[in-house]
Length: 420
Ligand code: GLU
Image (cartoon, helix red, strand yellow):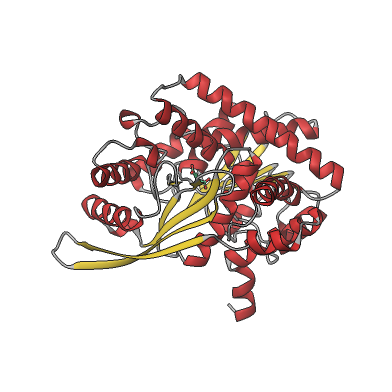
């Protein structure tokens, strides 16, 4: 990639360009723009741990807090070989706007370790997680910054973080992370929350367009927590999921894919590729399929100006963070694609994280129905809030969502003023 292309696709530059577009549409005060387009704090840590063979390994980790004007910082931790500081900065900024779009009393943060977790044993993963937690413990805590799962981290990783933090403190601190196992203060419905929230926004988009979801064709890129459960939920609602993929490639069938069969095949073989009765398809190819609904649920920069002209679903629901570049946005908008932007489409995860944290702080736990109902209310209301801005200001859906989120954070920042 050329240096210019590299800069254009650097996630932090993407996040800043998205911010600038919305700030302009809001005619935001210049001082507020200066403050909101950079992170408040970024911590870089080295994480040493002993491997099973006795050798030492040192990996680089990050925790970035973008903004805390509306409440404690909130956001997941990802383990991935391509994690960089700029990626984590972008993800932290997106968390700030996301929490504000759904009106949670949180700021935004994100963490990451540059590591291939698939190359580590469970024991090594635990040691690395505990040491990373120790290194970022100076800035996290239930009132300060609350991590959660993200790409290649799960409830078990959250349990290790909670335990390590608790041991340092000397008393149980379940509210330090969300997405924990139920046995230590997790919430019912958290695991499914990202996909469930995304499904509600897809239902709303269908309603908006006056078309039924049942019978629509769907392609899902990414088969982790968001993608695999979205497959279940969309299938349950009568949509026909014709293609899914993971990091090794995809599976395609014009007859539709049964989530149970795909999940069983992935469990046995490690991948969705080769699910009986399907053809193999590439990740890029999947994005260009002629489907009604496309759900990118993997990583950033999947839809760029290079492939956007060939990507024409009716609805693009961004379960992933940052899958689309600003250049691609313009092309998609021109082609009439109805975008449900990431900071709205995938906000169900952090919304139920908030519910989990509230339950932990109150020591009082809700039924799954209560969780799902409250999630549904938040997602449907937020969808309508974003649509109202898009219509009133005649902007695309991404800019509308940004205007809603940035507007709320800007108001909190303005009214608090600058200390110092
Ligand atoms: N990692 C998820 C996200 O990107 C969830 C964050 C959270 O629950 O704090 O929204």
